[in-house]
Image (tube, rainbow, N blue to C red; front, side, top):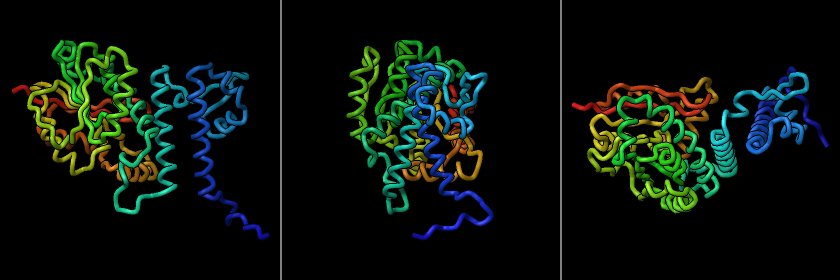
Length: 319
């Protein structure tokens, strides 16, 4: 048996380092998941080898024998923590799918080829964005809270998926109705199962199979939610003028976007992931320019969790 020599100069094998990073992420997600139902100190003590991985990754330190987690490891509240865990699990599942069988065409297979578990994890993760939209963004957009606080307040949830964001909006906006549209029937079937467990808020949520590029409801909504990264650029170009018309005068369109990438690796991963999922690589900066070009005004940005989506908002002029 032959033994390969170490890399020249004692440098680390980059593939081995990336593999270790994947395991570190798995340790982080597992710890975050366990910490949703038990104190962090108990979770750390229950799996010392996993915790050692977190320490080596810079996500865990000690203060007199008391574990101190990096802020990104333990979100501020239970619902946010659950959504973050779901998002990380979805990302890991998609990465494994990409490693196992990369689609051969120039574009990825898209959401239709992902299994139900990935769709459910991704959709449930979107609940955190829905809560941020309703509780942090809506109150900051002039006139919108009043509109959505009335019995005729209406929200359009584009690409509703399994309706995680729609349910979060309906819970946080107890008088508004939410219409969720999606092109994937399987996702809508899963969404109906999620609505069956959502309680009374489900009465204010309606779902329909529809391509966003075919929306034709002039003046129908006070708020349009647009998960921009998940739409192909061509679809986005066709859909945006229709969505602008679907707003009531003074209504707001809020687009979920990726933050500008802070390093080349993150930028490349974001582009690859967007293409694999049949989407586009627009970041928050590009999306702000696109919304302004449609005639929407007062463009505003709202960061969510560190490294998470940036919500870009703009409204239809009244006059």
